[in-house]
Length: 375
Image 1 (cartoon, helix red, strand yellow):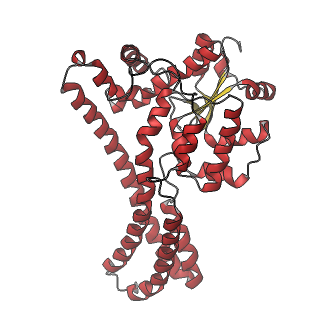
Image 2 (image 1 turned 45 degrees about the vertical axis):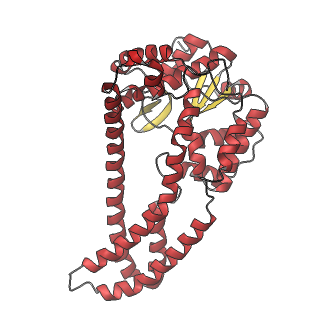
Image 3 (image 1 turned 90 degrees about the vertical axis):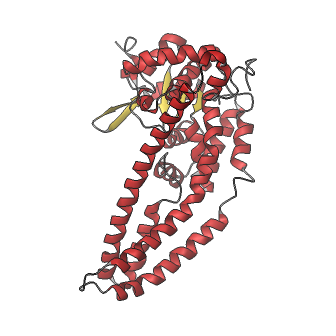
């Protein structure tokens, strides 16, 4: 039974231990991009684990993930920098809300008097944080480290003809809900097949090296993970089986915090508990300076001044925070629609036959330019 349905069986402790002794570790682009979102200690802890793996030749990355890292890097840096403005705007919004109150039983002037020192203190702390953050635009030690770690460890890129075959196969797989990537179908165009390209390149690495694979990703979607009643069980059984069928090696997956937890268990890596908690705290689509920091900080300070007034302020903060989160969700949906529309525009603006390299280069830059091997 287990040999026929390997994806439905959790590895035993011995199997996990054996897997960790011989497997290759392949991180997703989001794992590398989240290094910018962690504090320095957490980021260095993860980099240290990767460095040790690279020393023993057990670290790889797919061409697709490496490309996505470079493509999205500046956007992540920009988002981090924008967080300071987001918090400042939320502070201003709270002040404006107080100004708009017309309820005669709410002493607005008194509340503003209580709130002003809190605003000033949060702004001062925020400015200190801003001055301590590196300027990743001009000097990016994280990219320098990543470049060094994965030198010669990037999988081969696909040429346009290979990509065209994958896109055609992807259409069939997505219609049948075969993982991974089918939840990206709403993106439209060839961009929706990014995860499928990534998956095939993971299989390529396994085929080339004959090594088991552990894939590390902060993607939480159900086209990668088997979930039951809200609980993540493990990698999708279809992925485990496909790897076994095509490369004849075991396959497993971790989110970053799980990977670090097991790195502590199965290796000599010293990892602090607070580091793992920091990794768990950072959602892949959110940045280090979360809006919730403002809420918690103001709640703490307000309650030291006046418990009842602090509760009034906290209620207003919660309302604004909820509105902000809704805006973030709306923005994410708009970004997906924007990508889909951009793709459609590119598809109708010219024919693929005239210039396949240019067409596919829109989604996979550098494809076809150098297919000699590793980068």
